[in-house]
Length: 387
Image (tube, rainbow, N blue to C red; front, side):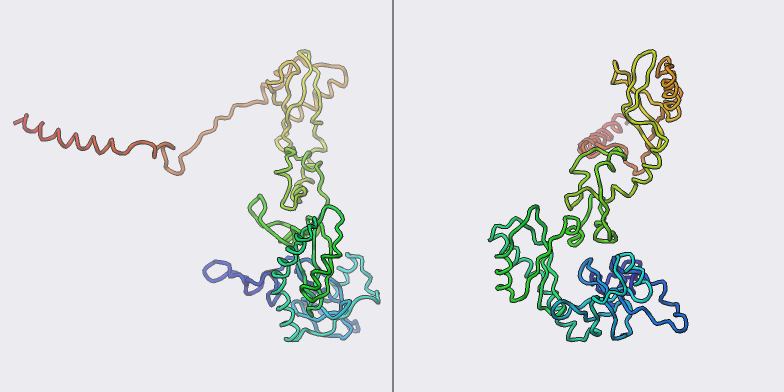
């Protein structure tokens, strides 16, 4: 999916177009869709679908009607209709796949209110668009200063200019409802443009800003994840993770999206797994489950009177004992089952680095030199005595 300027170079190092998803072929953006119908011709008599998908800054995508029957391809920069003026975006999908995407997003292809594509963007349109994009960081900084001066409890995270430069959309996050009427007046006076405020969630903010996660990789939401599913603490409980907010929360302050990645595998493994709060009745006393390893299919039990001593049992053994307890039958003790299950594994460590001691640098180095000097002094004395 990488474009020619993003592919690997001759020396094996990645080139990197450094355009942040706005390269000519549009192959290095996370919202790029592979058009697998591009090499197929339409049947005789069928006209191509007259709607296209256009991408704007970050994750915003919209559908437009190609009423002028322009020959558009993926990566073309087009001028589109907006509420006032025009906007500039990049075509990400054309043809019949747009119909599939519209059905997925629940947008009717026969909707007459769909905005139109005016034309392919001219060089003048692109110059104005790039000039507005260059102003966004400066305006974002200035708008934050105005919000702080007004003592508003909100965070302005991003600014998006319209293609013609007549309007700017400010994305913000806030815990409670914010009265930003005075903020809009001050910013409109300072920047000389129309202002639109749009509140987003904390996950959308992390998606727009990006960053590095605790795993050492770029955030999933800013690289490839395009839809956000709800994440609950039950996902961490099923995976036997400690309910520590500092470890389970991402940069957005919410639960990490990656908690759902392996959840289906855990749920499948837990279908025939004994409950982790199960109790075993033995003649020696009542035993409680202290720990469970789902994929090793091992559970650790301890007696009520001796909680410090754990006995490892396999999943089949626990199910067998629980079935006996249902029939009011008790086993003699956990030790009878746990003896064959526990095996002492001796771990051996190899010196792969070639370092014999971790304290080798702490030893003084002067002793060897002193011993060598003493040996040199003692040698001539030994030879004189021999004569």
